[in-house]
Length: 565
Image 1 (spheres, rainbow, N blue to C red):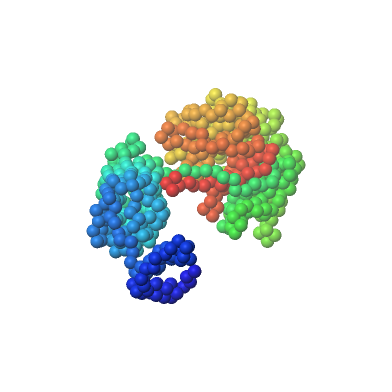
Image 2: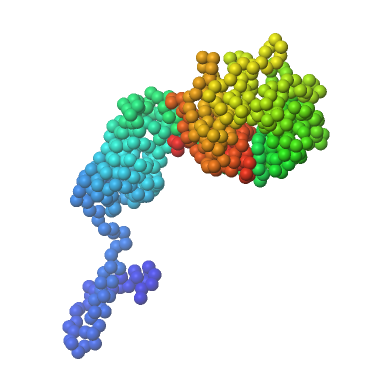
């Protein structure tokens, strides 16, 4: 056995020198040397191998489908990349090749390569690091007339012309600061969300770029992406994901801000409490801050007047009260008992301001109830006006209608009625009603681009969306809503939603379609017996609180999804 390079060299030199001096001996069948013949033959072959000069390599042979020179190789109709090439090859061209994929480090055996041309091939995929191991390949990659449809790598391109390219990977050219020229002609670009990044890059690049002509969608066909500043579809979608759950049933939720902090009040009748939560800027969730106890609390409504925070607590039993935030003790203390001789069964609290005056109204849902308006007088709230006797009011909604203050009361006993604020006698005056809207349990107003709408919740039948125009409200959409106690409008970042709760099935979230001018079904969420949906925004994040009469209070976060990724 030969070990080590020096031993092998010595044997080789000794063997080679003796081969020329010794005479051949004739071997007979009986001689011992005859028996050693196979061994000698093997040894001779091994000696010849060892005697080969170490620097000699197998000579390069140009593949049959290629033409080769000292520094370049050109192959036509080739099915693979030449594997044996001279070390100093600096140019490789493959035309009409039949291979479909450029794999990782596919050209790394040609470290001197400076020019690579892949023209009119059947490529569909170029893997990451496909051109690794080519330190001299810079600004010379050409990929023309292929069938690239799906993936490219982060390399320097000058030409991607005459392909069937529908989309390029996001930010493909983002790091190519030295790119001077790019040819993207003759492709089939889909100018949808996938092209949004390319549209932005075309506006900002200093490179000379050919026309990028859209092949689709139909409304974008034959338009130049180079000229566009926006796409019809801005490639943004949204979703609602569960962020946090509060282990308590609830009927209503309200929110207020005080000294750069955001708070939430939750009316939890079964827990006999009005829970006060505070947003934790470090933990990024809502934590318990205070707890106002009571009996069958159905509403906790906050109001900030001259930098003082009050919470109006409406109860089914034991009267209703107003609590004030005590900054020294960092808690809410009872401030005032509400005059409730005319309030039997409070169902909703609405707080609003007219001019410099603050008011709140309690909608009374009992048969003998009387919805009542209260006014602030610097020392507290006092009974100011009685409204709508004997009608079992379930909801009150304050709104500005044609520049004037109005109040709408919804009732289980009749259609909603509209009151207008009289500046002369400083009272609400009955103005009219909303016809054909029986059994409305809640009414909420909202605006979309200055247009005023109403969301009318009905437990039996369809809930309705109405639009104000020609001095009246007209129906524009009906939403199936059997078992619904709330149809709540809200908006985030110019996207307008309706949340339709249901006691019997999934709650539905609808999204406004500005072209069709109505709401499309967007998402369904499961909430047990939802009673309210309340928007809370903090730290540039948006949440929707969903109260539940039979389950935990759910907090969903509104998130933005970039479809161009």
